[in-house]
Image 1 (tube, one colour):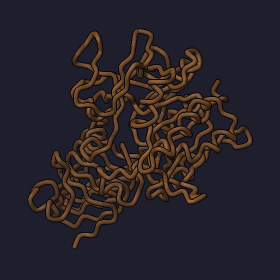
Image 2 (cartoon, rainbow, N blue to C red):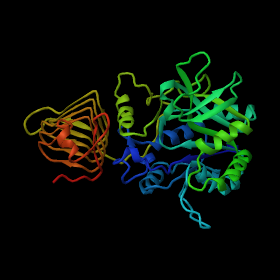
Image 3 (cartoon, rainbow, N blue to C red):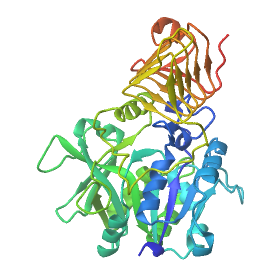
Image 4 (cartoon, one colour):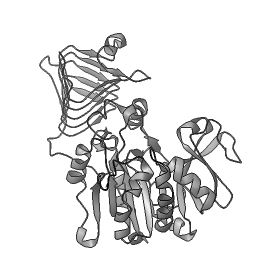
Length: 406
């Protein structure tokens, strides 16, 4: 069954609402959780699910993503027909870059055909969740579906952020509407709706038919939510697969996040600091793989003033040194330095950030390679911060990669 499937990960998104974190990288390459990139969650799901023929469609600012795939995910054996292959737009025959999610697949149909696949698993590379795709593929085959949509229940008032599905008692999809203000709700609970997660399984012949029939009609934008799925619901056999159900080997935390904004990204990171996090990263047979540099162990030591370095309720990665500083409810990526009497609270500090003596940081996201001068305060005076940095709707201050203080 698994050998009949090929996986396509859509990883070309610009992620403009995550700027400046996406100023120099594609959204799937954005750091997360102290040691990961966003795409690691989808790739780890594929690894644990036994899906080992993977095409990663890239486009915007793809260099760091390609490097990450090379350094962290060159683990499959081509001699056994296994691969993780990045595929940028080929720009052939006067075709420009990908014009949307469906167009990205359409431009690479020949890659699916030459791999002799019968089923295509289509995933997004920028969602935080854990999922076993094998039971979904099994259901797709058993129901003889043209398309299977992974769905989860959400509060109805959140529907404007999702594609919303209505299904009958046999779990056959009867309606699909993209980001509605007034969604169809569940029969037994009018406060809840069924949302598509952006996880699709197509039978290849049906996918080819849909793409070829629609590609020429959509010159500016061509995607699944607006063009392919509504047509499939009208003319094909489309079924729901319920996320977090009884099947599957991964623990059923039912956590799924699209970290599409600075605030959702910040909150998803902060979720990891709960005493019982809503997503279990510690299940030994479903760990999230990533590339890690070889660095020294983290340590907390006293600073020049004699003050002890301490961390409280925080995630601390390798190479971190807290020398006389205090870190509370924060996430520190590799090689972060927090120096004498600096205080870091409720913040995310990416690789190679140095926090100078006496600094105060509160509710900040500091991207890579930033040196914060002694005595600097960020997240304390929002009026002053607005003159220099990006501030999210909820007041999180974001400092871009390689920023230099004057």
